[in-house]
Length: 242
Length: 242
DNA sequence: CCAATAGTGTCTGTGAGACAGTATGTC
DNA sequence: GACATACTGTCTCACAGACACTATTGG
Image (cartoon, rainbow over all chains, first blue to last red; front, side, top):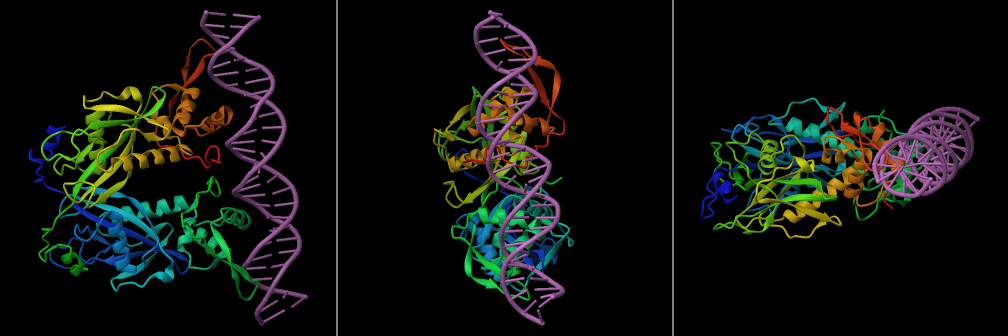
């Protein structure tokens, strides 16, 4: 074991003088805008030696060993810097590391995914929302960020089948039809109103507020997320997919 | 963006002369032995400067930028080195990184979890199986490996509720009662025989072989995993827990 | 009154849970 | 034949899906 460690570069005095991979954190930030699922992307800088100059990429960057206590704090920092949002749903997605994904050398990124309400975003000028259509992004991304995004979309869709995650995409107050619409946008298929309502209401995740949304038709009850914002797991998925 | 990158240590000529975290990979390896869930642990070396000398730890170590093409290959290599197993179920569990988890400095580990059949293991001398009782390991582990293991156990239990993962813990040929027993070991609760059989058989994940397991009673049909060993996802969990 | 959307009720099918009952081997 | 374990059938219940029906607003 000590032998193995030495072979991998750990000197006998515990020196650690062997090449280390680059370590980054990237964040896939989703929101609903314009009745569509959107993801926040930034444009890469154009400086000398910058890989993928001016390409689109996920927001992210190197771990700062002086500033970041841990990976989650680093992800939260990047989310904050880009959107101003501080307390959203933030979940680890996975990590991608290889010799070839970054031309600057062996690198590993820790990817997170975040759900925020659209209106919460106060974006920096280099960041823009891009729509997801048919479960895919049209644009090509730098590095392997296309793979990471595809994984994030799949994970989101998967979890939406049996969790309350879409609630984190909603504004502070929303109606049940609003929430159902967001489920349908993410899943890209219609859901049955009655079953949807039963399920959400029996999950004890939202509570009515003393207001109605008024419109040119029957008003709808407004709800808000209950405190203790843990996501709810249902014991069945929606439509058993085929 | 370029400014941000520079502030984090990237020189204007694309130099990368800023401190990098240590990068490791650890593997949580599960198997069934002696009618119990077990995890494979190794003893830390005792050399100078080694953190947690002689403590128990998950098998793992530094990413070798010369040897390892990517993180999954690194995890597979460590699994192979410790057990000789080459083609098991290997899934990424998550990553843990912080300033304090390793006394040698800011470090991030990419954790994987593997399921192997007991008999597949030809262990190196420093590796030993430890039983999981009541969903927990008795022994204390080095670093934050206790947290990682707890996460792995939780993930395993969770997924066993609605997937065919326990199939990867089985030997090449097994009976349905055998498989049910493994589900029960992992979940630590009895399952209903009839519902279990219906579920597994309708999932189209195993196929009978032309043999029976004989014993002092009625023989049982032997099965094997079908090719294309993707895990199966069920649309419901087992017993809706409470 | 009509249009439009919110919200409820009713019927049916599926599959889990419970458990009894049958099948097939050894001793 | 006794036993042990493998396997099947039957009944019930919970809940999703489908869809019709009622409710409540603005125009």
